[in-house]
Image (cartoon, rainbow, N blue to C red; front, side, top):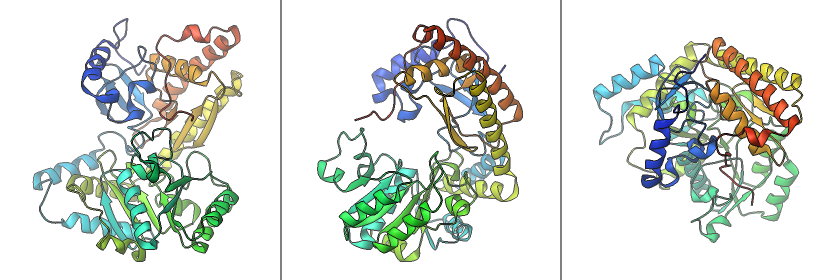
Length: 432
């Protein structure tokens, strides 16, 4: 089994450190989706110590099969040797400079060759840098202010003001971005018509965990052209995971700008905006500039990631691991009669377990709690990596089979709430 440690004090150090974190760190974590509210507190680890391949160890020494993989960046897995070697080599030459580096130029040229629609590239440190920069470029290019968005696009004011986490975002800023539903071209067309001449950008995740219906992305492209809006694909998730060329490689629709992060650095912070020269050249004057843009370690890591993608069967392996998980879970859910209570959404390289119903968060919490007992870091979603193995899948499915059997029994006998040892998990974004 993939877990060590145990007993009543299995998470003793995590609990102690969380008490300290309440006195030192607002929200107790730097990232909401990694925090203690996302796992059943008291029955889950809180702090990680180290990781390797497809596994992570918490501060109490418990080992888990790691499926969230740091919220998705670790496409190659923890400690990939070629990425680590590239980072080490760059460390020996320096990590910050007073001039641009050869590496950032070479990586930009490589990404231009990688994506057929790309003519220029700018780098950031995380996905929010890239999406905010792309939106600024679109506004500068069009001379307009309004942005239409679909999906999740990071923490900055222009987007987060559209969510329930909008504290601190001025009302006037919130009014400049409007969300639209996915796979509904008519709704987008109506918004564009209602604000004709005002829309600077249409930004969307080309695919989240639901596939675009036939012709949807093509219609979004047509509508953007018809209304003179810049089309931005937020590919922080789909980039290098859905296809080597992201959504363009999978669906054949080219945006004006695309934003990449996560898998580009395999855990090292780096992001990129790529796109048409006509739009990108506004960055000659529009301000997109910070001390660690073009960070040498991120540039080195990204180059190594592209090397691995070009020379090794990364996506075929990830697809195989993901399909085995999806097929295995689908069979288990059906066999245990949970089809109305547990749903699978997504594609092999990124998928989630959804728990509909008024007690969905309770059901999710108990699922996570019981999977953790079996040695699976269960966030109720999976981002398979090149480092995950068939044994990881076999062990995970063995744990899940027992958990699904127990959930079915506890739902039937009405004892589900009594089975929760930890606290119920909380959503990052709450319903208005």
